[in-house]
Image 1 (cartoon, helix red, strand yellow):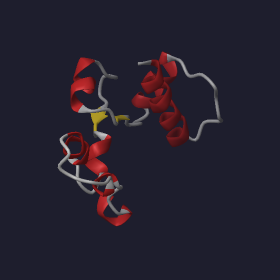
Image 2 (image 1 turned 120 degrees about the horizontal axis):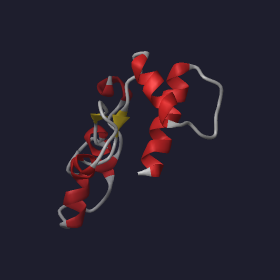
Image 3 (image 1 turned 90 degrees about the vertical axis):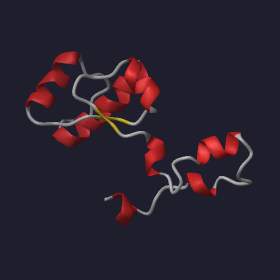
Length: 94
């Protein structure tokens, strides 16, 4: 959870234009959200469901792959390479 919070806070800092900081507390997050900052969580749905920052939007990183099911297909031996886990082209992600 600390790692997730660190990643989300880094994104909030960047979005807010604040000077680089090594640590951001809960109050900073609350203030950023109050100013209209949004937060997203790139973890899988099951992990997100176990706990998240209130108001965070869940966009699993796999959803941005060419084939969102690539990981499962690789585990099952249904594909021979990782081509499906490449990122979807930028124009399509928008």
